[in-house]
Length: 290
Image 1 (spheres, rainbow, N blue to C red):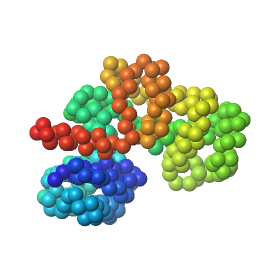
Image 2: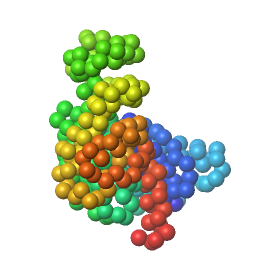
Image 3: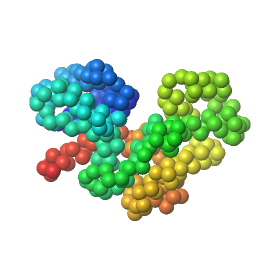
Image 4: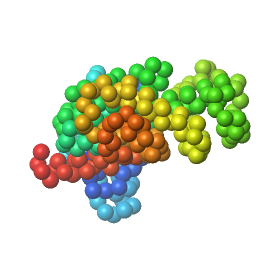
């Protein structure tokens, strides 16, 4: 039996091929210590066992797992070795592979084909995938230096334009009414409270509700164009389809398409959750015996 996992800093989705997935706490080895990671893996194992019992569709026994494919945020050397060791302990008879969330996104979006794979969520990332491995990658650099097109970057532009009165008065009034935030609270959340990137990304639903306003839509389209110009065009392969995964791409699909067209690129797949594409990839790999 094959187990795959898609893990971000917030949540992890575990899925035995051919069955429904379960969601548990996120794992990020750059942030989390061994005890935290071990507990998260154990909770995933318990959730899978409980699901198998409740559904009656399959039997889940850790010792019967042959392969574990784990794709996660922060899973780069040397941090990935810790995750691999702890997963191996939980699934002693399995061959364990631990790769980055970017690799997981590339497999989910491109399969065995060459293409450009992008993640647009709280943060943003991208790579040039040759059908087997990542061969080029523009550094994401985080929400302060980079992360163009991400929820954090969109939120940063939104509050900046609100506070500097760059958006129509009606939008400014709606923002304060709908979010109940003051200028003081915004400054405090961004500069004094933990995880300001998460706070900024949490403001993107406001943008989604007001896309009928031309200034709001222009802000979103322009931010996506910044992502494409500063990240995707670096690969120098305009003939390749550009694929996207993540909550931001699903919410703003029309605006993303407009940005792609304006930049003269080719839009590929838009996928909300990479686990769906990961499952398809591994099922096809098993069938083909690759």
